[in-house]
Image (tube, rainbow, N blue to C red; front, side):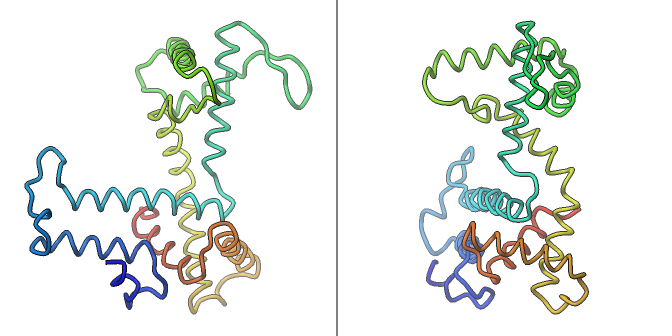
Length: 234
């Protein structure tokens, strides 16, 4: 399959997309291997779903790399916001004040910031105060079981992190799509339609994809086309 992917006429490089296409073709032709003919039982032996899951994981990585190269919201920023939220909730539960990093003054926990975060991650019917207490209790219970290392809130609260990430993604979906379309114009025959500033922004995006993640222009174009088709549609 990798050999076939490397010779694919649809791509100039050996790309994950080409490998995934070969895997999809394999699962459609069940006469090739006996294991493809096994009955699907409760998700077991569902080879077509396995390929879809692999593609989903790849799209997550590709999405993150493109956003990083564009200078848009990143996973680090989700984590920073949630870590700040937990810090303020902890101070709220203890009745403590926090030092303002800009003024140096001791201030009450930022109620507005906490409420904004909770509007994203909480289920509609939950009580805000009980939610905060439950959150701190979950952090404490996790620390008792994992006494060493830095707390990874995305592991403790995967559902909350998913809601937070989805919210930021939805807010920036239009921007991401426009930027991705500009990259395709730049790499195609429509570069002249972009302003000099837009061309500069695209050049910086491509440079970021190359220097940080090793994309050539062909791979960057293929990846962005895939994202537009799978993630950035209306």
